[in-house]
Length: 81
Image (cartoon, rainbow, N blue to C red; front, top):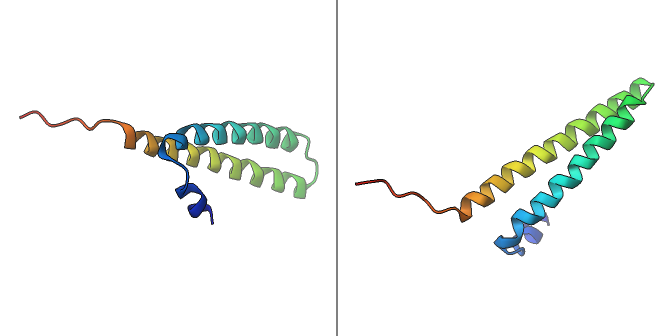
């Protein structure tokens, strides 16, 4: 379903959408770190660590996708003859 939704978004909107998504996940990382700092039990700590890992993976993945989208719009340099 995600592929179907993303395929309907025009290419000119992908980069701003990914930037907003990266900003949201950055806030999630900060929130997860705050919650993790106040964790006392092993269960709370493990859930906090998993939350930080998943949010970090989303941010890194978002930057990778944004980089690939920006490469689509860049002009390719022609080799000198």
